[in-house]
Structures are given as structure tokens and as C-alpha cells.
Length: 371
Image 1: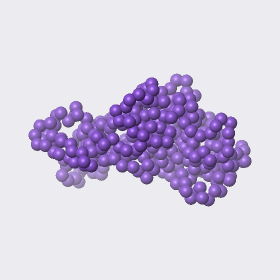
Image 2: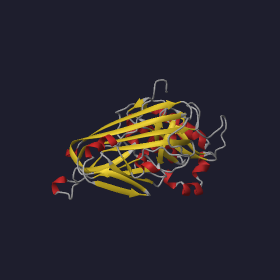
Image 3: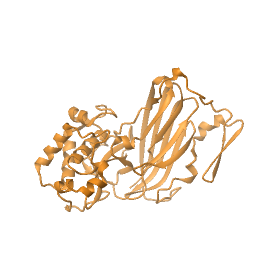
Image 4: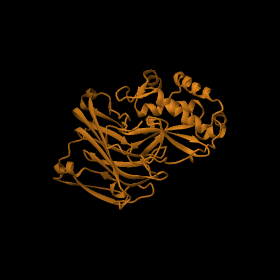
């Protein structure tokens, strides 16, 4: 499946802000089960963008806006191909096959526990508390000799049966215990609960952030779980939909939980301590591969967009006066800066500590027909 995905995030502040420093994880991963054909990132007001890979191999774009502004817009557009049809699993297990070890055997595998320790222990959003331990024990008691693959499938079914998908029932900070107590949540919550069940049982599990293809317009991105099941490797399971990950699942990044793959995080000074967040995600299903402006099978960042990704419409108001030339990696770029708002030279005591940008809860809604 081929999709063109546009993810637009807008912040509006009660008053002018300054010294805004942010990082985003909006560039889909390349390689493995999907191919990234093209990626654009637009920042308004204009900002210099630095690109790097985090500990888990996710693409991160870091930028700061030092001068006064009362809004911030980040828009990412991706052209990506997943290597499966919409109803076809992306990877893993031939139908009817299960060559995975017993879950008890896997839990006692010291080499695996050492190699994947970070996906077996507690993490910021998955503390492995008593509530989830009791839930996991009940699932294991149904079949103590179950295989790792069968446990993963059964645990996902239990999560989907226990939780109701309801936007607004939780927040981006909700704990696994709160989700279980409330009995409802969004895909971020479904993923965290399933991760906790897997880790309690000794099955390495990680959080996957991304998009769900075929959803024309949404107010957020999506999330699911990947568990390490020998001999198949990492297998994706969407507890929200109750299916293995298919050609509809476009992956942005992976980590221990949401904290490692937050779409955007940042701080700023000023703004009256209040910011309004608006998010829109659109997904267009494209027919066939066809030509793309920048065809890439590897992980290289688009060279022409590495130094500064700019919204030219926003720049026109600044195009009078002296010239600033920036150079990085052999690329030279000219920006007119005479009328850029002045940076804040120093902090005043009354400015107070930096405020956190509101974070985006991953709650992409299911389309009609999804169960």
C-alpha cells in the first residue's frame, strides 16, 4: 500500500513566546516492512532544523525559535509504501503455524533477557504495577503451557475485550492502572496495557508510533505494540483493532513506551503559560508506486532539506535588508533577516520557568467497519 500522509500541528499562545525549543518524530522509518519515498517538514516561523537518530534508531528533528512569536506550526508530509496489502499482515507467521517456544521457557531465557532488557522491565508509562500483574496472571492461568505467540494473541484479545475505545476518557499522562480501572481509553492506552501484560509474562514488548492508512482525516496519530517472538522476530499487533499489523500500519518509531516516541515535545518562555493545541492528520491512499520526487530505499535524510526547512510564505515578510548566509554540509542557503523579531538576550526573573508544549495523545480513531 502507498500513502501520502500530512500531519499538521499548530500551537497558539495567549501572548508572545520566545526561546521555544522543540523536537519532533514525524519522519517514517525506512527499510524493513516499509519504504519512504519522500518527506517534507515545514516549520513556521522559520527555523534551522537539525536531524539525528535517537537511541532506538528513530529520526528526530530538533529546532528552536529564539525570537518572539505567538504561534508555531509544524507540518510533515510523507510518501510511504508498506510491503503488504491493507488486509495482509506485514510480517511474521504463516497461517496456522506456531513454532514459538512456550512462554515459560522464553521467560527463563537469560540471553534474551539480557539482550532485550529494556523491553522487559518497567518504563515511565509502563511501571509493571500490581493491577497489570494480576491481569497477566489471569491470562497465563488459562493455559500455563501456552506458546509465546499464542499468549501474545490471547493478551491482545483480552485487552480489546476489557477496554472500550473512547476519546477523552484518558489523557496523554494516564497510567496503565488508571486505564484498567476506568475500562476505556485510546490506542496509546491499549498499547501500554498490552505491553505491560507481555512484560509481566517475560515476553519482550515495545511501543510503536505511526499512522493508520485508510483513515482520511484524524485528530491524532496511531499506536500499537511489537513483541519479540522467536523465531519470527518483532511481530506487530494492534490491540485497538484486534488484528496483526497490516499494510495499513505506517511506522514512525519505536521505544519502551510513549515517552520514547512522543510526536512532539518542547519548552518555551512566555505565552502567558497557556498554549492551544490543534492537530490534523490526513491520509491519501495512492495507487501504485509511480515516480516520486526523491526515491530513497535507505535512511538518508533529504539533503536539500537538512539545513533549514522553511515556509516560504512566512518568509516573505522578512525579505528586506541585510543577508544572512548559512552553510552546512556543503549546502549554502540565503535568508533575508533585517526584519526578524529580535531575540531575547537574557531571561528576566518575572519570566519564570519554561512551559511545556502540550503533547499529542495518540488516539487515531477507527474508521467505519473496523472492529
